[in-house]
Amino acid sequence: HRLVLHVHLVETDFPLTGNVIIEVTPEKKEEFTLKLRIPSWSANTVVKVNGQTQEAAPGTYAELTRKWQAGDRIEVAFDMTCRVIDAPHGSNRKGDNFQAVVWGPIVLARDQNIDPDYDKPVRIIADENGIVKIKKVNPTLPTTRIEFAVPTADGEIPMTDYASVNGWERAQIKTWLPVKTEYMDGYIQKAEIHGRTRSCVFQSNARSSRQDAPVCPDDIRNRIRRRETLKFRRLIRIH
Image (cartoon, rainbow, N blue to C red):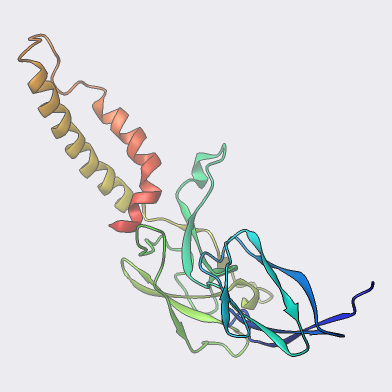
């Protein structure tokens, strides 16, 4: 038989928050499965049906099976955690040292209209999982929907949702933010010293059984630099 079903988006202020309320109104009470897409960017989504928590995994569909009746409500709280994303490594090495900041699914941007240093290199402060503790602030411009204070090693910088940026007056923006290279160089230097120390200890121990074993070979620096450059984007977040 044919099921007449009405699904209404009752309440949401998404993407200002991740909260969504949906009302399910079938013509009559009946059991069926309603599939709700959980986006991969929402790592910890909370889904409730009439107040009862349901299973929801990122990048899947939450399958809500029950005897639905008029007035049943689905509450969804998407995870709008702010994260830093590393630029992909393509064939052009000049694009390596860049990061972007996203809030839920929203890409944030540095806007020249409110930030004269919009194109300056920065180091975004994030934890080991890439999570950034941003603060929502009152928008500087009346046309801006969402504005945040984003922590960096040199203090907070203003960033807005990309869609709010007024680029029609020749103002520039940055979504891929250049990473401060002096920090990267300093980190690699510390890693090299630490790596050489460990190699010296290891190979000094080896000398007891093999007297001709070299101590701190010349290629250690290059080997460590290659390794630490690849690891830098992950490890920069915890320093």
